[in-house]
Amino acid sequence: MLGHIAGSRYELDNIKTKGFAFGGYFTDDSILTAAVEDAFVKKDVGEVTSSDVVDSLVRFGKHYLQRPESRFGNRMAQWFLSFDHRPYGSMGDGAPARIGPVGWVGKDEDEVKGLSFLVTHVTHDTPEALRGAECVTMCIFWARKGLGKAEIIERVERDYYALPGDYEKLRSDYGGSLLTQNVVPKAIFSFLRGTDTADAIKTAVSIGGDSDIIAAITGSIAEAFYGPSFLQEEALDKFKDPLMAKTEKGFYDYLKKRKAIEGCVDKEDGDGWFVGAE
Image 1 (cartoon, rainbow, N blue to C red):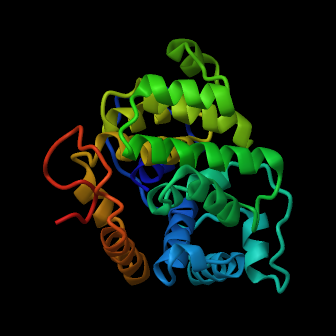
Image 2: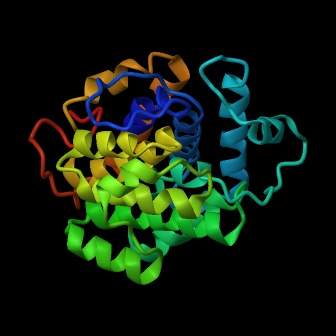
C-alpha cells in the first residue's frame, strides 16, 4: 500500500527520477488489497471461498465507489454494481497489485499458490493474470522466509519470467503498459535493485508507466524482504478512514494470531516488523 500511495501522484504524469518526496493518497488498489485482507480475517485460511473474496471486493468497492480518491476503472466499477459477479477475462495488472496479503497468510508454497488462484480468478481469470499474481505472491512468500535475492531471481526466471537487467535503459525507454506480463517483471526488478524498502519503491516509480501499480507490487515484496521502512507512519496516516483503519488493524492482528511473522527475517531495523507491529 505504501508503494501504491507513493506512485499514485505519478500514474498519469511519470517522473523519471528517484529524486522525489514521498506523498500521495490511497486509491483503488489499496482499497482492493484491504478487501482481500478482509476476506481472510473473517475465516480460517482453509475455509475462505471464492464467494467470500467476491463479497469483500464488492463491499469495499461499493463503499468507496463514489469517492474521488477511489479512481476505479470503469470495468471494475461495473463489476461492483452488477448482479453478475463472474470473472471478466482481464489480463490487467490490478490482480498482482492486490495479491500481497496472500503471501503472508499461506503456510507453504502449495497453499500460497492455491490462495493466489482463489483471490485472482474471481475477476482476472486469464492465464497471464493468474501467472502474474502467483509470481508476486511467491516472491513475497520467499522473501519473508529468508531467501536471498539470487535465489528469488533464479526461481522467478525458472518458473515465471525473464527479468530486465538494465535500469537506465528501462527508465529511459519504458512507456507503460497495463498488462500483467509487462508490469510484474519490472516491479520485481525494482525490488531487486532497491537497497531498502523506500529505495525499491522509488526505483519502481522512476521507471514510469503504471507507476502506482508497479510500486505497489515492488513495495509488497520489499517489505517482506527488508521489513518496514521509515515511512510507516506516513502510510498509516493515509488510512484515517474508519473502514481502512479497522481492516489494517484486523489483518495485522490476524497475522500475529497465525504467527505469520515468526518466519520473517528483519533485515532493516528492529523497530517492529511491519506497520502496526508492537
